[in-house]
Amino acid sequence: MNYRLLGRSGLAVSELCLGTMTFGGATSEADSIQMMHRFFDQGGNFLDTADVYVNGRSEEIVGKAIQGRRAEVIVASKVRMKVSDDINGAGVSRKHILDGIDASLRRLNTDYIDLYQMHVWDHATPIEETLRTLDDLVSSGKVRYIGCSNYFAWQLMKSLACSDANRYIRFVSIQPQYSLVSREMDREMMSLCLEENVGVIPWAPLGGGFLTGRYSRVEPDSGRLTAKAGESSWMYRATDKNFVILDTVLQAAAELGVTPAQISLNWLLQRRGITSPIFGASTLEQFEDNMGATGWTMPQDIWSRLDEASSLPSEYPNRFIEKFKRPL
Ligand SMILES: NC(=O)c1ccc[n+]([C@@H]2O[C@H](COP(=O)([O-])OP(=O)(O)OC[C@H]3O[C@@H](n4cnc5c(N)ncnc54)[C@H](OP(=O)(O)O)[C@@H]3O)[C@@H](O)[C@H]2O)c1
Image (cartoon, rainbow, N blue to C red):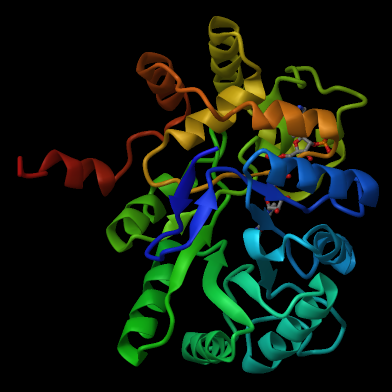
């Protein structure tokens, strides 16, 4: 396992982050705890959870797994989604963040969160209020670093500018959806993150399972993806372009003698600007498969073939700006 610095910070995180969204739901508590210990034993130190995952069960199970190993684990959690019917039970207001951190710390059975992330942009709260509150949390020791998730590039840049102007703590990372079948962040976010040295920790790096090779063009009756809602639903994943990308992944896997999941994660490990993909695994078998993405380097020609198959079409203004790039 290799380690990388998280954005403009001195925090070293493993090149793979273990997502815990299924813990206490599709993955039993016992399997979840075993998975986390196997992850730590294989060099992983980075876990991602959120207050809303399985109604707080995920944080509770993470809290159990880190007992006795707290100092070596980097725990990332999130606040912002709706946790109650109360009008202030969502968002990133000072009130909801201060209530949310205490509830998360209780569930995690710890006195600090390493990386506290804003789950999605909140149009209702001024960014100054959010960042001032996060700055207070860092001063109090309840939080060590802050990050965000599901932002437009302008929202991240506005946040960074607000931190700099007020000398508040800065976001060190962004958690966007990013994978071979979801490269929307290439429009603006990826270049912003390189420019500002913000770490990128992609969610759904396997497209929610689509990139593991278990789905074919015919909608499978028993396929788990068909039961999923939101970004990883069959409706979003099963496009003609995505099946062409999947064919390229399957071909690369056959050539290199590895699995499609390993190809998809390894491609991200070698992508400039990516810090640590956050993979999910519902079972221990899936976990072991995914961990095989580390420890080897994909030949450049195969990496480029995958890049070409999955890249966005050439668009304005990138197309125009690139055309006039000075040779400096
Ligand atoms: N910030 C956000 O808004 C946000 C949103 C979503 C997720 N996340 C984070 O990102 C993590 C990963 O997200 P994700 O679960 O959507 O990502 P993913 O890694 O793309 O997909 C994981 C799912 O794919 C299937 N799978 C994984 N490995 C497999 C293998 N080797 N062979 C066959 N199937 C395999 C499993 O689905 P089945 O259950 O169908 O078997 C598994 O639950 C989450 O745990 C969470 O921490 C964040």
